[in-house]
Image (cartoon, rainbow, N blue to C red; front, side, top):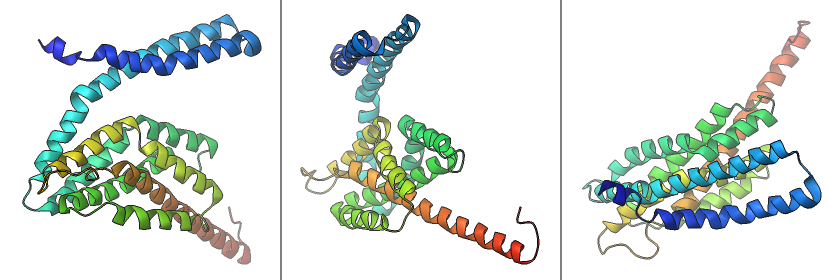
Length: 257
């Protein structure tokens, strides 16, 4: 019986993944035949990678369907019944922090940024910044949902601030900040945190409306973007401090190194 429950709808999930991967595989083969002419050993590795991707995505999405989404809704329903809505703030912060730290796409971006910056922007620092930013706004978003306040009261002014900050931050950080907003809304984050928000909304007086509980994905992207933009100001301040220290050492006749 457990096996039937665990793999219920698995064929449909595999079909969805196949519809995504098969066109990509066919496109690669067309380029391989007419343009790339890559060695057979490399093509073999690509095929093996596609197969493992198919298996991994299928199992992941199945796990999301049978565990993550129901768990998020159940936990959200419990939080939605709390007599003091303020209690969702610490719970939402901790859950948001842990989920983003475990988000694969966020880790990939952080690692690539560290490589591209030659270690100037550390992977752990960027990942922690994204996690704290998302945790802060997600917890606030859950509180708004529990209070019946539209999330647009955060989203609209938040994006105005995020776009305005582009005039002052380093262009490299501007690109990273919006990329971080995209990767923060990865499959792990969205499926759990959004389901939890919908669970909270379902327990509010009058029941859920069409818009209640939604907007969290936009809020998560905004949170990560603002957090990385804030990190840009921290790096700029550090750079100015280092330059000022170097100028003082030079004026004193000391080696700035």
